Image (cartoon, rainbow, N blue to C red; front, side, top):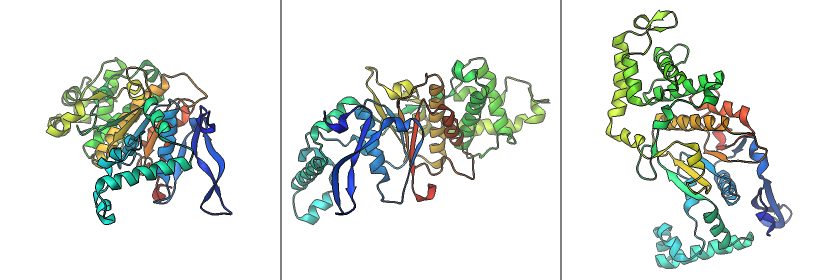
Length: 373
């Protein structure tokens, strides 16, 4: 067995020879996957190789049968699917930059052949070849999900409003955090930056979610809208509902929610694969998956909305798992900037804080540019 094929050892490269410069030693850089059972952050300047390093980690995890969930705000991680075990020019041809071939004065086919040879030579210098690419493709299924779009595999958010599991319902803090995060993400989609303790919109929606969820009743957007118009309770705290939030104002909020639901483009949010963490980590045959959520096409509010719902589902899944000392799965966020800002509390921030209590379950692997350092 090649040294870097040992289970649990992620092959990242070789030691750089400082004395000879631009040369590498034969010593391998092997990263112990157990080290990722705690959180990790990759920070560096633009162009320093952060994404390349993180893609290598994701590939190594896939080879070791470890599934990954990837939030990809820019589209860099979708390149994980550009793998060609045969390393032939015809495989590269659809993906080359045609203008590069023109500048070199050669045909597109010839340029594709040069790229294939370049990759073949580069891999061999690091002790790899097409067989390792084949191994990568065979050990993990790669899927690009496109929430709010049919460009890739669509994602349905309907499961996000279903009643939480008993593990969450029995944990007061976790249940409260799920309600608050779901409410904040939904209001964020409306452009409402609501304070959970002061905002009437936030308090009303939180009470609606709590009312139905403690009864283990599933919700969807139409039912939430109807409950805003006609709440299933008569009081919030010591005040009757009309004094706290008059019907006319509730109708305005219901209309805003209804406008989103009735918008033609929003229907793509309601069809596709559910946000079922088990199914996102493994396919129906039990094969590990690398599930990439491409969200570059979404607005900032839509990105926060979806990311919060996904993390909500993930936290619930984590709490239902037994402890482990080995790496079970990876969550990778390509560009953490904006998700856990030091001066604000978006819906996603609490999820990263919650993960601190569940280190044995999951590894949060995220990276940011110099701004987020």
